[in-house]
Amino acid sequence: MMKEFQNLIIEQTPKTPQIDLDLLTGDLIFSGRSIPENAAKVYEPVLNWVTEYILKARPTTDLRLKLEYFNTASILWLAKIFKVLIRINKPDYVLIVHLYLPVDELDEMSDFEDIIDAFSPIEDIVRDAIFSIGIKLHGIDDKGEIIKETLVFI
Image (cartoon, rainbow, N blue to C red; front, side, top):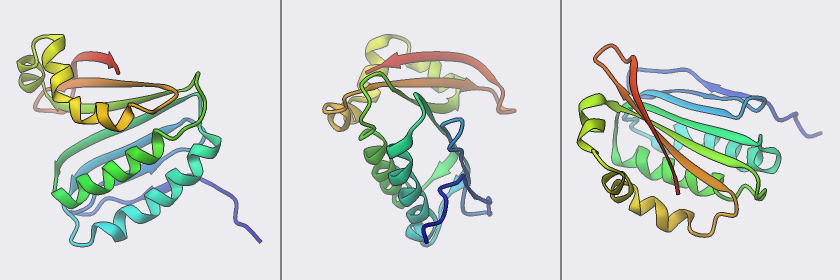
């Protein structure tokens, strides 16, 4: 008997992020630090969940990366997850990747060209996507409050 597909929540530890994947809202939230000793143990269940999610994705999927710090292994797993998400097979659907960074870093990306240059590696991955992909940059202050936002569609 197949078990019912449901939300996935992985509690935060000092070395792993809080992961909250919500099937009904399409919110996929990663927050905290991601420096696990065994990244596969943390991210493989997420990759499996996302692989099933894309078959019944919401019209808008919000991938929220509120990671304060992450290691190379985490980035490799997040890239795998992103590559699965761009296989959503509905032309009128949207994936918005939310990135949270200190407002001074956001201010340094002063014009549209800087923002596009920062995300050019993503462009190669998303070239064959059949739906819209946006990147929303959130400038945050020392308390984590959002004080500036920019949205870019690629």
